[in-house]
Length: 350
Image (cartoon, rainbow, N blue to C red):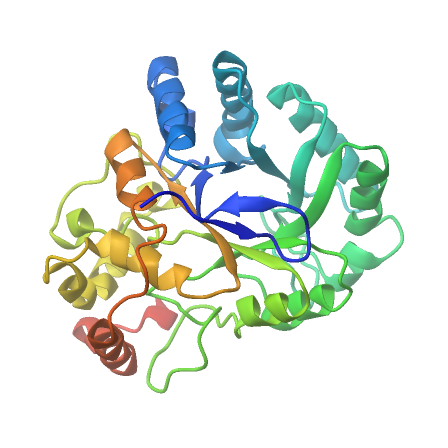
């Protein structure tokens, strides 16, 4: 089955159902050798992947710089999305901070423009500047004078970005919906996976999640905004390797590498999903991706890859069709049991 493509909301962008996530969690772009990176990106593009998602935060700029070098070596230019991180000290002029960030990203990528820029900071109803890393921005920070939107629109007028949006890691759904209501944003990144399907499913009785995304994919779709799904394998826990007690790939990193307890809690939560790979039709990872692609509001599933076989495993999901009705019935039972109560622990309290 060849790669299938979907439109990004109301834009003219058509992206592969499987996208290439270039972050720290899987590590191919940040930690692999130059030869491995080049071979991996080349194979991904040969298999139809045309959408790459990066950020200045990934590898502290290495992801963007490495991608730029790989694309030059391959003499190919896919659809690129990168991001803006608003940090403590940027709050007095968010528009200028966005412009500075994007211009630095373009230098690292060695490109004149990118297709999509997203603000990485998750929208919240109340601003919080007293946290390390990405501060929590409120709606006014996005839409008000000298806010993020002002900077993004300036970059668009200057031809440095075609479309923009924002990411939603632990975002507050009501704030996200207020931003979407403006119809100014073309693509959002959203968590949506078998451990937390709230971004694309109605509330499921009995199931508790750490963040309720309140069907944001449906909401965005109704307003002409596309959705790319991040962490489709829940940090690598929705894999046959993880639920069988295997170790993470040597290139895998990110927050879960630093927090072994959280990683193990997520693996425990994923254990009731093992049935998805025990019937010989697909691996657990493939089932997780095919579940996501069942939602028409999803334009791309961003895979994080550590090696070439992982690329092949995810690419094979495009066009493979929906999960069986039996699988979906069993999933519903797992969700309604709150993942079998996974040995009495509550994920929302973890």
